Length: 593
Image (cartoon, rainbow, N blue to C red; front, side, top):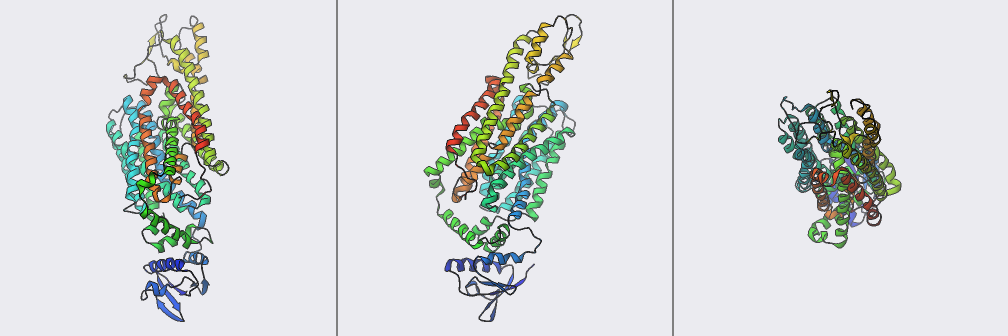
């Protein structure tokens, strides 16, 4: 609603402040009816030029005069008293943005949901048959990373033509379309195709969402609030896994549409425009109104706008190619690249996308959906710990703790797999028929065989799922037992929880640092003038590495064995500790850009 206001003008400010004030008030005249008072004469905003009406920036609001830094406080009176302002408003804005990161959580964990579901029910929404080969199972996770590369650059380049809010609206629409398409797909290859569209959402949110949060938050809250994004991803993973207890994969896909729909509502009605982008587009009045509401009382909003203008000027004068070739920038790019390599090859990416397969291949006897839920829940716990620890340890300290926890947890899991398979595989080779993966049989089950003495059929489980101790006892007493049925379940149950516990600890450790901090540093590490393109390069590298890791899971498993692959992941985390200690620079509590 337009409103009237009077300003008493004098000449108490320096020329730069007056120039900015003139631009802001000139922009305001497009939306409000101001009456400027000078020498006891009223000048209507619509009939006066910007230079004539805005020669100074001392104003009178509700018969009270304000000057200099108190002007921003006076502008707060434009808003009703019930509106949230300052840092509480920053928290509200980040909360609204969290719906976008909930979408990412659903994208990351969906391979575990659909593969576990199809393994059991093997049907689509139409009742037709559906199955995935080993290669398609790898593609279910990796194709989203392919789409993420497209999303990263699409999100960055689109901001040159439209505002971030319009980019967010497009992201929300694409997310809804991709989930509905996956739910209605009658063929496995169509599900894989729309996983690319899923990935576009993943990449676009990663590229634009964190940058937006960095722009609207101040230095004090930026550290904890950026971690809220990571927490939202973990919450999204949990909220996508829980419905799988009762719903089929296509019904879970419909549930996943809720998050982008809520984000779309927030974008259209509530989410403020980026003040930085508004300044760069010349909308100074809108930028000042938003900054006044976002910043605490006493903040010199005029000075921040002046900084944004200087950044814009620098951005226009900056040669991106030459800036990226700067030695310090190249060093920081290299550091972020290595952190993403550590993130991918420490096992985090494959643990998220293929939780059920990892547990199954490692010998867990826990129910797949429950185990996946517990693993995703552990990440939420890790993020909660990280939000608290980042104030004391900083980002580098959280990374070091993350590497240590992951190295130990994955090493224990590797030792467990090595011992059970090395001891059990050789001894059972004459008694158990190995099931080829090409057979349409769940990999954790072994076909029935007839007992030589009784002729009765007994149901064997893979030797990899048997504890070493029980297998030793079984071989010693096999003459006294006519069947293996019944005994195997108890024996496997005794140690079948070990892989789950190890994976829970590993993912909780990843959530403390390596899960989110590389993405945050990709926005914080670079000068503002080249931040969008530098961040896009970093995230693109991360997604490409993710594609390689997810697609190479089965070949590496065949080449190194499951235990060897886990030892490789653990070794990467061990090597990451000295690298992080000596190379990663702290950013918490420091100005960026």
